[in-house]
Image (cartoon, rainbow, N blue to C red; front, side, top):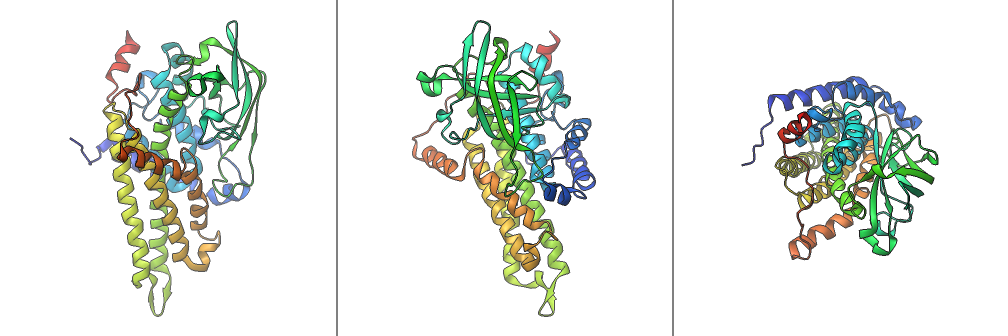
Length: 405
């Protein structure tokens, strides 16, 4: 049975993150956005609050909360700015949760624990210049030589590119097998041949660190192979179930931010002798935001509930990501319209919300990819098979017991 109420712990979490955003992000985000500056100290302060591993078991350095707690964190962070939700999405959703699901005990001890504690930062390297939605088009290779793999290639549009200590990198170990020849590796920044370069001039999420990764004969020990050879595509898709979940939750934060800014402006601005909130067409836009927020939350928390049960949620997460991101973009567009000419200026935050809202419609599965997925599910062309490894159900009793044995 699904329970839509939040626990006292979750309500306290939301309050804590909201206060953090109001104090540590809101007063500075306009400047950081203008300067295209990623304030890395925010990650350290999030770690101090236990938010870099909020849904990772305590046995592995995390806070041990459930997956909807992660959704709450992402929603409230994106209310401040998409850049910091993106950082948590990548570090926790794409990297740490994937290590929790697929890593062996040695890998969890070496990499997951310091990441969950926020002592180290993790990133995710899948996209390439010519391989986005078409993952099989990737060119990066990892050739086995004795006890190592020699990694060559590049990745692009990688969040935390200059900040991450560890990156999950996907590469071909056998290109003749196409999807079944892709493998996943944990790669450390300090290894020789690893370099990165930030991308500037982005439409939105300018306060984020996004860029390229380069690998020139990087020697990766065989112990850093995640899962088995050829499991990379399966690992990547399961990771995207987690990443898309956090993106959808973050989109709720954008809608919430647009709604809060628009309601405030509606009470401040008057036309034709009354507050603009009294005009029915403005009320219509406000009502659409509220409907979009509540519908998106329901889809997100449903997916989170499935995660908490340890059940596969690819279909549900895809729907949540698609719809929430579309609602967020529409809400941001309406927020600018409500603000009129002022919405076209950075005097108010809504123009930043609009710029930021576009990227999530593209990354971690474009709107078009999710539309196709949902159509194929309904028509019966697509069916999810059980994964060989699932995220542990919450509460994390088994993980804790395993660690103590």
